Structures are given as structure tokens and as C-alpha cells.
Amino acid sequence: MTSVRDAWLRREERKRNITSVSIAALLYALLLAGIMLSNLFSVKEFTDFSGPIVVRLGKPEGVDEVRVDAPTEEIVIPEPDAPTPEIAEPAQVSVPSPTVTMPAKMVPAPDPAKPKPAAPKVDPIAQPSTGAGNLVLKGSEAGNSYDISVMGSPDSVRRGGYVPINLFMPLPFTVSDAIYARIPDLSGLSGTAAMRKKEFEAAYLRQGNSWQLKNSKQPDFSLRPTLWIILEDAGFDTESADYKNGKNLRPVTLRFKVAAYSAGKGAQLQQVTIMPGSGSGYSDIDEAVLYGFQRAQFSNTGKIAIEGSFTYRF
Image (cartoon, rainbow, N blue to C red; front, side, top):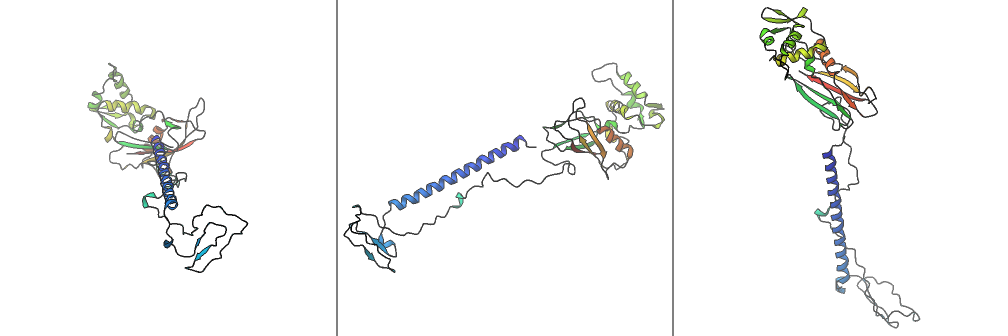
């Protein structure tokens, strides 16, 4: 994928190359013209040359004379019946061609028409944080971070809706009564605190001065986002949640495909799987990452499915 800035830089480089070639060609032409004018109008001295010099007198009855400084050459005498022009001809002298040394600053610029070597291709699946020309997204949530890399131009593939993965993580087994008491109204909706407490009570049971998950069982994935948002609004420390405390969680990497757009279906996620050798070390957390990512929405205007990867770090 070519960005606007890269395209502008290439256009500017092309202009500079064309300007350099034009200036170099102009300097060459001026230098060659100067040499030609110098040879045309300079005064030739016979003493400046060595070797045989032929002097033509320019009259039919005249005889060419030869000055011998070296082995003589054959002299051609014109026939009497072949009149020659009355205008004297300039002396014919064999002069070696001058050698021109080009200044260092006049080295021709590289030909812009020659293609540059292609940059090596980068596998966005193996290296999700690189891959120029691909859709690369990064983010953080509740002390966790993630990155998404999709093998396609941002002009053809985009991410639509995205639900934070941490909202699908295992809920705390025990919540203090102080958190329960601080459950607030929904933003801008007065009188909703009581309703939210009932939603909390559907999953938790009071045990003295605290609340515990009913039957010590995690709620269904679809119910967890509502409960996590209630806890966050009440001041619960989500960055130090139970599912992370005392655990060395490894990154979870998923591989997936974004199908080509089709009417009525959009661009659906396909083949979302945890890569072999990847995983946090806890199956319930891996399942939460997998379920949460599948709630994401992408668009793909291309004609084929596009591969991508998603890595979630704790």
C-alpha cells in the first residue's frame, strides 16, 4: 500500500533527478560548443605542430611544396584541365582530438527511468508490528495491550466495531460490599443505579461484608461485559483483576481471515484460531480472548479473503 507521503517523496525525487540530468546535459553542450568555437577562431601556428605539413598555393600551375620533418607522404598534383577555385584553402593539419576531463560536480545523476531494487517482502503474520502497506492497529485496555495486522491496504480493509477483550475475561470471585455500594447510575440516566445493582445481584450473592459469584461459576461470555462495566464504574481496579494476580500470563496470538465482501453478509471473520505454541497458559483466559476477538467487525472491499493476526498481551 502506497501512502500519500511516500508518493509525494517519489515525485519530488523524480523531479530532482530530471533537473540534475537536464543541467548535466546543458553543461556538456556548453563545453562542447566552447571547444568547437575555440578551434574555429583560434590562430594556428605551424611551429605548434610536428610531422608533415602540406601547403597548397591555390593556383592550377603551382606545385605543392612539402616541409619534411618526418617521413614524407605522397603529394597529389591536380590535372591541368581540372581548374580549382581561386579561393585559397586553409592548411589541412591532422590534430589529435582533445581529451575532456569531466569535473567531479558534473557526474551525471542516476537515470530516473531505471527501477530501484524491490524491497524485501515482510510477512505481516510473522511480524505484526511491521509490514508497510498493511493495516496495522495497536491499542491498550485495562493494563493489557494488543496489536492487529491484516495483509491488505487500509484502503481496501478496515476494522469496524471492536469490543474490548478485557470485558470477556473471568470476573472476580469476590467483590467487597464497598464496591457494591458505589455502583452508580448510568451516565446521564438518573435512577438506574438500582437496576444495575439487580444485574449485579443476578451473578453475585452476598456473603457477610462481601459478594461472591453464585456457585463459584463464571457467567456466560455474553453477560460478562455488563458486569465488568458496572465494576469499573464503581471503582474496581481492573488492572489488578483476579485473573491476572499471581500469574505469569503469556501473549495470546490468533490467526484469522477476513472474507471478501458479499451482499447480506458483509466481510465475515473466518478461521479464527489460536496459533500453535501460543497461549496464556490458562484455557479459560485463552477462550475469553478468542471469544472477544470474534466480536470484532472488519470490512474487505477486495475480491479474495485476507489473512491477519491478532496478539493480546497482559
